[in-house]
Length: 420
Image 1 (cartoon, rainbow, N blue to C red):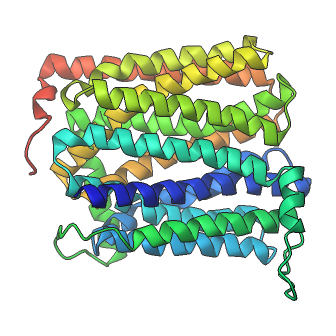
Image 2: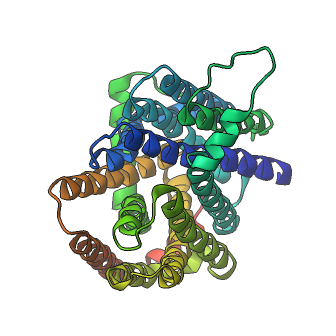
């Protein structure tokens, strides 16, 4: 079991590392193409699009075979997406193909945890997985910024294989070779993931029935007193997190006067904070007390507003670190609780697919709003204040809803309940 869990973590780390490095390589490619600024957030939007479109189908696919095999197939799709950029395909389309692979990968990545571990270990396991994922975001962000920097580009393009014309002549092509190598390393770990021997009923293949089944699973989670709260929190968190990534890049350019390869370090600082918060909550918060962390989500939204008053890198670093710590501390228990309720109410793959659908629909919506605001040239400080207060306000409403649920019935008693 231990070997299997650590193999899953290694596979997840390298796959996520490549995903994040690729994002900044693609952003640099858009800049070199003189693409409109509004296309930058659309890059992430194209990545998450298939999480929403494929949600009714990827859960059944993840449960139809050993999840290590599903993750292997998904990483091959990601490699194919990288290859498209070599053939001059537009970055938005190529990154969408990588997103297709990521959408297939996710239900297997999280679903296998509920097959491998008992409920009481899920918070700790999520702390490890999220912490490692965040470390991959930090390193992937730094790696992406480094790959598109002038020094790294000159070094990589200066490497020659004797008597062989590699055909690699641009910064983007050299950076993509490194990203593909990391994806291949992840696929090698995928092959070492053991079969948990978890077997599910025969998976439906009829698209209409799959959509109906997905709608039923989604309804089950949203009606469940614990499922609806944890799903609402994680849905808001991931939408806000994806948008904040691009807000920080724009803020670094406008307020701190930092170029892209330097601004990526700020994303890394936020991610470092998330890792610290995730590791701390994994040690301190048992599954039974997971809902006590909701007020930290409100605090995170309020702290984001403070970004408008910062014009120094020395102050920016601790502020972004604090935002990350608050985020990591409240999202890990919520994620673990959602996985537990999903596993109780339905199969692992299906519950993660429902989670992905809602979270990525939130990402699509918030990124689309941000892209519209950038296109309309709305002042960045207004965007930041509106963003922070919206997050804090919605988190407050979620907390009120949980209190109302508790007044009707002690839903916390459902935690640890055996599978239906």
